Structure formats: C-alpha cells, structure tokens
Length: 540
Image (cartoon, rainbow, N blue to C red; front, side, top):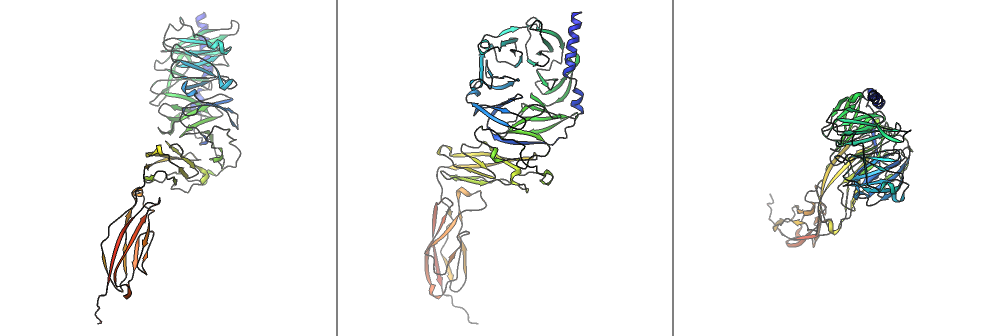
C-alpha cells in the first residue's frame, strides 16, 4: 500500500511538472528575436541569473554582479580573481554557486562582503548543485549524494555529509535539481530518477518515488515546471509520467542549458550553438565557434553574450538607438534602460548584411593604425554594431572606425576577426591581417636610363615606386618630389608623371633627382639625366 501511495505521489508530481508539455509543441517560434548589446565583457566563462541578480564570470575581469529589474541593469561590483575558483555558476533565488575547477565550491551572496558567503572543499568535483530550504544538495558522481547546511557560513564550511546511500543503492549520482515551491528534489542516477520531498511535519527529506528512465540521460533540465533530460551526444528528452522519455530532437553535442523565453525554448550547446525549439520544430539561431555564446534568463528576460558583448534579447521592433554607444562601457558600470527611445521601422532596413573585405596592412612601429569598416548595403550607422575579436591590447572600435597605437612588444603579425551585427539580427564577419614591423622600409624606385629628347617635342615619363609596407594596397600613399627640375618641367606628386616640352634654350644635358616618400616619411631617390638635341627637320 505504501509503495502504491508513493508511486501515486511521484506520478502526480511529474504530471505537474510536464502538464504544459503539449504547449511546447503547439506554440509558435515565429518571433523576431533581436539582440541589443549594452556592454563589453571579454572571455566570458559562464553566466547565470536569478529574479534579482545577474552573474557574469569572465576569465579576464573576474565575477561581475548586477542587480536587475524589468527595465534596468545596475552593476554592483566586480570580484577580481573569482575565475580561479571555477568556471560554472548555478543560481537560486538567494545564492549562486561557483565550481568547476577541482573540488572547491564557493557560495556567493550579493549582500555579503565581496559577494562571498562561504566556501569549502568537496571530496570530488561536483556534477550538479541544488538548494532546498537551508541545505544544498550536491551530485558527487561515484561518491554519491552530498549535503551541506546553509544556516550560516560556518556550518557550510564543514565536511560534506552523504545521504540516501541505501535508497540510491550506492550508484553514481549524475545530476540533481530542486523545485523550491513544491519542496521536491530530483536525483538522477544511471537509468533511474529518484524523487525526494521535504516533509514539513518531520522537517526532513524523504524519498517518495523512483522510476526507470532512458539510460542515455545524464543531465536534468527543469524549465518553467517542465522536466527534460539530455544525453552526452545531444539527444533532448521529455521526461513524462512513469519515467517515459520521448526524444524531442538530436543536436549532436552536449546540451549546456535550456531557457524558455516568451514562447520559445533557447538551447545552448557545448559547440557554441544556440537552437530554438517551438511549434514542433528545432531551428538553428546562432552558430559561430568564435562567438563564445552564453545564455541566461527566464520567461521574461533573456541575456546573451557573443563576440565579447553582453546584452538583452528582445522580440519585435527595437528602439532606434539600438546600438547606443553611450551604453557600451569598458568598465562594468551600470547599464541604462533599454526602453527609452523611439522605435525604428525595421521594414525599411536592408535584408542582408555584407562586410567589405580588407586588404592586409603593413605598418612600421610606432606609427598608429586607423581604418574604417564598411558594409555593402545602405545601413544606418546606428543600426549596426562593429566589434573586433582577438583585438590586441589598446585597440579601440569607435563607430565604424578602428584605432590602435601599437606598443613595442606588439611587433609582429596580428590576425583580426571583424564582426558586424545589425539591429535586425543579421551578422557577418571578415578577417584582416596587420603586420607591425620594427622599422619602415623606404619606397623602391625603378631605375631609369638616360633619355634623349628632341627640342620642341612634348615628352612624358612616369616614374614607378613601390612601398613595401603598402604592397597589398590598391591606393598608394607615395608622393613624388623633383629636385633641380629643368625650367618648365612638371612632376605630378601623386602618380610620378613628368611632362616637359624643351625649347631652344634647353639644348644640352639636364640632371635632376626624383624623390619618392611614403606615408611615414621614409624616402629614396633616383638620379635622372635628359639630353635635349636639335634634330633638323625637312622644311617640306
């Protein structure tokens, strides 16, 4: 009788979790999702959020914590060095948990000093973490299911206590998640899903059911009261009543996170891809191995990190100052409201985005570099955001311009990845190679022979010079200068063309120099000799 009662409770629990499953396949994904970056944060390792806070872990800057509301994101503080404690963040309504590098587990609380509530070392690296009441439950693989108290920082910094070993039959604990509202804990072991519930009368955790599930499931995902599982090779399952696990899609790589935003499910994979699930269809939304995609959010708010920028994802038409550069800050400052501007007419914008290619550049140290980024279509300047991936230290992007003052230790070849993102969701990228040389080579002028001119006949010649630092450029910056030119002779400073019509007084030999200078002042010259003669003409 007790077994049947437990099974009934478990079935009802799963029914509650997946009651909206029919909606997942019935809702449409015909939303027009738009991304608005508002700040630059490079080398992001992970992101997580709660209803009131946003956590961004950067390999470069450490842990940045923001206070969030419906229309505002306010920077609270940055804890430099936290990236050395882990590379994964899990959150609940009060705490965040940082782990991933070895056995260390750090509990974060925004109101604590520098955001750290407490920390401890576990027997092994955790696979999953979930809080229920004043306890945190930890999936510790072959070690089992561990628990630590959160009543105060001192209680947490104690050896982990293992529970439910007999119930779990000492099997590997693959994952764990909780439902705070219903006070339930789900524990995943190979081919089994255990359901525990917190009993108020006895103030303890008890198992209320166990069911067999697909043996390929190694990770659990609870998304807006819907329970999913995923395999290592990217099969997404819906976990239904009695442990039924119906495959929904195959993505070919491990699923990191699933977030329901509006009416669409956003799926983030380890391949740095983002897929959309809705209307019984799975479509690829974003895919770029260099973008370093990260997602976090809930049904009302969604944050996206890509190409070193963090921002919100929206549906429908976006504000006209979609790429407001005043909101982009190199430091992690507060971000103003995203809903304070007029809307732009997306129908009038181009339906493609194509970056124009860049020729390689050779620049001698210590000269600065300044070049523009252009697209083939007629996009408004405020509708495109430009960024440079793998940008060297000191390089800045301002609007459509890129400026860089190289340092001595940056001499060498740099391969830059230039990215353009439109307010309507288009993205394109191109590459440019910049070679910073240790010295400036002067232009090389082609040698010329002594020429004989006939008095009264027009004479033209073009002197050719090549700048080694601009050999890939179609527009040379070489300037020509003549020294001691014959009277009446003209040398075009841009194309090096000499024109002259010698007269009777010009008979004889004329010697002068042609000097070629490059954009950085280096120069070379060639000696020119012209001999003017009088050639008798037939009067007839």
